[in-house]
Image (cartoon, rainbow, N blue to C red; front, side, top):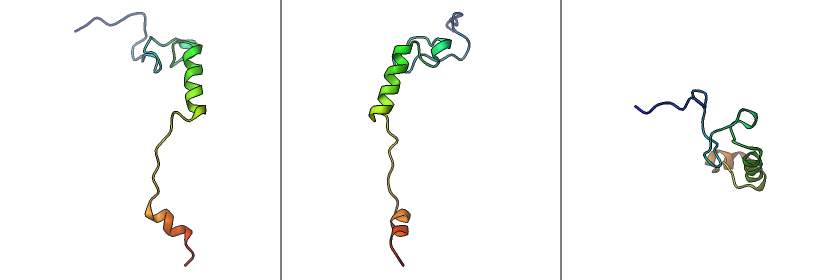
Length: 64
């Protein structure tokens, strides 16, 4: 079994942008730059949760 890196706390995950070890002041990122990159991706729409319309939603719009 490989030795655990003692410089990182147990359970610490790498930066989701670049993969470097995360820093407590910017968690879960490694730097302010990676935080800004992530924020820009959210604001520009690069991250999106796919949605699909269901038949139930279409039925609710029609008058009965």
